[in-house]
Image (tube, rainbow, N blue to C red):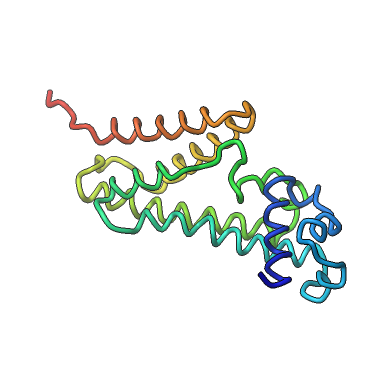
Length: 191
């Protein structure tokens, strides 16, 4: 691992654990096991390191949502994505950044976070549109609205899991989302 990679890996872990505001350059250097000169050789300071790290983190998190565009029927892809392992108690690597006031106030950092969520919502909306076209969900479903709802359910699962210090609320949120999708796709009795 290069020094640059050690720094971005350390910053990624600290952002996830503590957030931007609670992470000092010394924390990053200690975690990375590198000297002070190493950080300033690669980055102008904490902010530039955090932006680069957040950019990489958003890419990693959004890569998981590629399952929504992969093989199988739309609902198979949706179920596969919903049932990916999610460490609820640790929280979402990008969703947690919305709780950090310094990130929210920084246009560049919050822009990366928002852009990551926008990409995930776009992939959800595409899969849900395909599901309605395939007859797996009713035509009355508004894919973009449902995409926002499903992202909110996942993020809410993280919040509840962290609040309780237990994975169970995250798992319950995912089961609930699956149950809602199953109910929406169930054939309607004719009257």
